[in-house]
Image 1 (tube, rainbow, N blue to C red):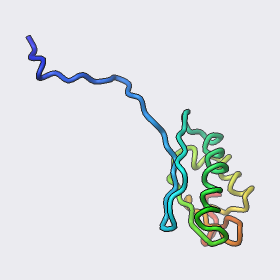
Image 2 (cartoon, helix red, strand yellow):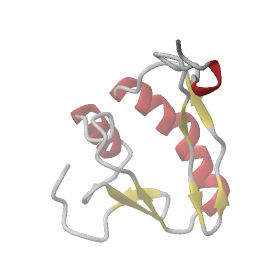
Image 3 (cartoon, rainbow, N blue to C red):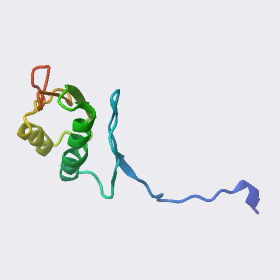
Image 4 (cartoon, one colour):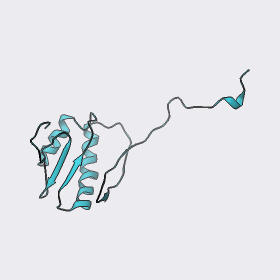
Length: 111
């Protein structure tokens, strides 16, 4: 027989939480708790409703670099289009805002 003191219960499929957040030397933005898997449409909503307001609050009209990893939602064509629609040029997933618009300080490659 097995000794109950040597057994530990576990959960086969534990619950998880997906959270988006922004942090910088100027401060932190709000956390966005995501209730679904993140695809390009969900990520675009996060950019519009969390990233842009956080950038305005933290930087106003000052320049900043927005950096993201290469998660599939981040590198989706729809997201590249979204950055272009917001006057952004992306370079290795970094975007810089200058004079109220997003632009790269490097030659465009990924967008």
